[in-house]
Length: 563
Ligand code: ATP
Ligand code: MG
Image 1 (tube, rainbow, N blue to C red):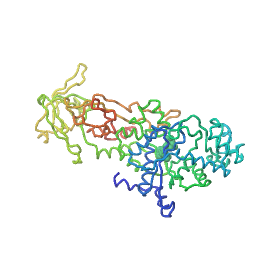
Image 2 (cartoon, rainbow, N blue to C red):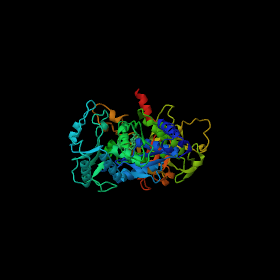
Image 3 (spheres, rainbow, N blue to C red):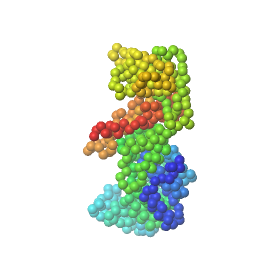
Image 4 (cartoon, rainbow, N blue to C red):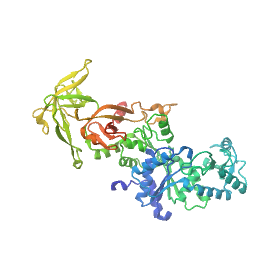
């Protein structure tokens, strides 16, 4: 990570930490954690939370734990546990030896629950789920006490031990906190602490447990056990803070971390709910979690987004409590900026049109040199073979065109990038009148110099037909056509806004010869086309390149036309 990046912009959370440090709170320590539930892959919203938590730890000389919040075993698995670690590491963050699982604390959590019962602050409740809901009341009406609320401590201890021992069926009993059924905060109306779940094999604890603690109980206690000082979470947990504090105040705990909420990142033209991302994968709208159209970290990696670009994006969107709905163009600009600096330039023809250079000898190869980067000489040069037959892009030729068409026109000249000026002498067509080949002549004096006394329209890219590599190129675009797919027309499912052109696969592209050595993950700018990266499925025998991002924001242009 560069020095420039480490001095991150200030935000209200950093202000709180500064004040805490000045007041000597938490013994001058700063300890954060990133607590994903391993029930899916991480997405761009998680990236914001990762950058925030690890960024604060890095800047304050503190620590950041990676903790799996794994209390819901039937939706979690090891694939997700591994993917999350891979993605956090790839983003550039290191948790050292501070990898934890909430399930590491199951025994301790059980003891805390017993402590609550002993204090008369928790009870075993036999109401059915339906009754619990009915007793809970509404926002306008207070709830009613459960008939089991005043069970004696000894009976609660006995029943809770038997819940653990597996004597009771799923749903027949729960352990609840005894707080206040009339509280205006619904979370305080005797919330569930433990429920019974038989027959699930937990990815960490196997079949050791048939009771599982609830999130609110687990989270604050895990934070406390780990000595977290600032527990940062998204705004939907604001109403849970009272409960977070209640557990920590009621129980004898190592320390009392401060929960601070910030707003969730929402990115336009995509969705960031794990439930919806799971649905996109399960129902085949995308190939998998790492489909380059997915807003997952794995998808963005496969698409060719860089860790530096994603970190830059997270720093640009900032951390506040107000709505954080960001245009996709902001993320794409971060990607363009980073790739513009680092991606070597290459030539690739996506829609090939054959050009025969009639005054260039057959069988001869002239090795021309091309700079890998227009501004950064340290990236060096490469050889580009020039031959009698080349490909140019169909878009770069018109039989007739106005002067503002700065490409090849019948009877006129154009410069081939890194090579010569050619003139189009003859247009060959098939029986239907479609252009299938051009016959051109080149001016051998124009490799470095412009022709004297003539003005050449423009510069186009090209690839040697004999020495170019045939490749598959996947053109990715936004996955949705609506900026807020889940807030479309009334009654419309977000899946109704899937962009049918989010993937176009071109199978007959030609790439310049030097790309034969490209390795999966490498990134290039295909001049005049965009940024591309080598797909993990790429091989020498079957080259595959993904378009990461276009050179300019074509969506912004479309939006402007609409107005
Ligand atoms: P979902 O609601 O989609 O299931 P989640 O919040 O339950 O997501 P977790 O795995 O629990 O997913 O999230 C881990 C951490 O990442 C939490 O601290 C959560 O607040 C944070 N986080 C999740 N989504 C976002 C987001 N869109 N913006 C910022 N932080 C997020
Ligand atoms: Mg969550």
